[in-house]
Amino acid sequence: MTRIGRRLRGWTNGVLDLPQDVLQEMPRITLIGNKELYIENHRGVLHFSSEQLRLALVKGVLEITGEELVIRNILGQELAVIGIISEIRYKESGENP
Image 1 (cartoon, rainbow, N blue to C red):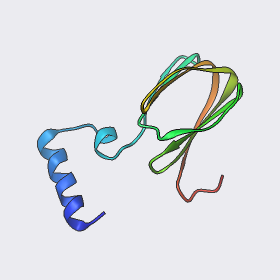
Image 2: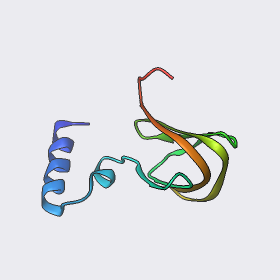
Image 3: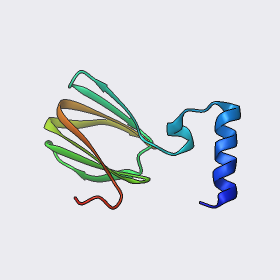
Image 4: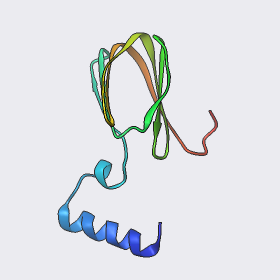
């Protein structure tokens, strides 16, 4: 990102008071117990099975592991997963798999 772009983003953050997930395209993850998971701002499903879900992010990959995982719905950049969720792991770009 250019220096002007960084300055503009910093200025808009201060003036508009927008959340970081909107400004930096970070994922927003909402976990309800260990049964439901909602993810916003993902870039697509890389892998899905009843034990693992891998999602592409702007700067990395999100891995969800568990049992009996089911994708309840996908709406644009939003996704809902149900099942028994045992682990959520965020791997930034450049990190070993």
